Image (cartoon, rainbow, N blue to C red; front, side, top):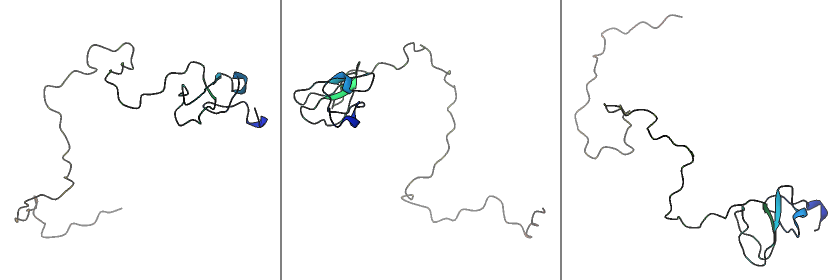
Length: 124
């Protein structure tokens, strides 16, 4: 290939003519049209040949499939990691993102009445 400084080509790079045009661990996938390049994602130039992994997987499907993805752990446990609690867990009350639809007109009284004399400032 030319120019010589472009070789060896890296993963998903083209245009290669033979496996030796690719970096170690990659092979040159010869294409005659718009076949997908195994192990690569993106749009390839029609008829260009690209370097790809030797043991590449097929590209992902464009639409979700109805099959279930296998679990990541090859030896999952049959029991939960921690036992369920008998009481509900406490949750923090988070303010609503929008104002209340029908607020009351009553002011909220302080829980502790104000003192008659101010407190002294803290000392250092």
